Length: 274
Image (cartoon, rainbow, N blue to C red; front, side):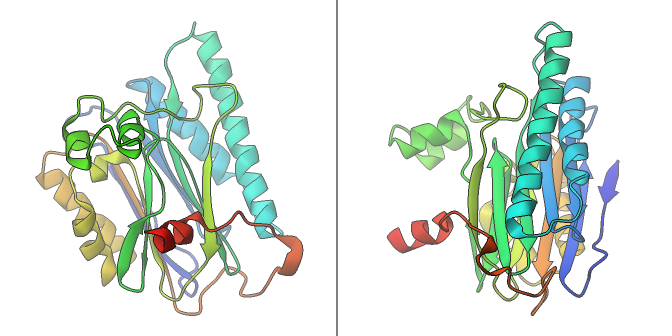
């Protein structure tokens, strides 16, 4: 089964999305949110097997989908945090009621208010940004192998072959207090964001993702990438959301002045330090 969603605000953002069960799994444990009218897009990849994974990602997606309109960028971020805390509490209660059954979900979310954007994530679902012809991974995987790469114990090539490459170190629902990472900055003309579960990156290289989203419409890019995954076996569920900012677009168009305090743009700092 394939689910798609298109943006109701084409003058600001062009949104495409697709979610597919893949060729091996019997149930789709991924979920996504595309609410451009609120400046919110998200992908959740459930864990726990079969019904439990679908419940976890569905619970998280439902909470985020109900965020509603925000008054400022700070309010939008606070609404997302409240939604995550709500979903986390619901999942913890379910886990206790099912005698400690394993259940949880990754999360990657894009928030946009006026000229600002923020990327929030937990787990190994990813968000990429294509800007000025160059694509970069904004999120950092919360996985055992990424920790070993960062500490110099393992190379990227070794990580791709490691039997523990899918072992994640953070997720929503696995602890009473969820841990989230945040990166933020200002929107650029023609920015393109791609959010995905690891069902995409397990089969498609970053360079191929960049080619697909560079000069293609948002929905067409999603469908082209899904086709690649299916051609290569689709061993997992796959969910892709592409958000393309139209030139001059925004979901407010103004300046919220000093009312918003964003964390330093870690993505830009990483680039300047490289």
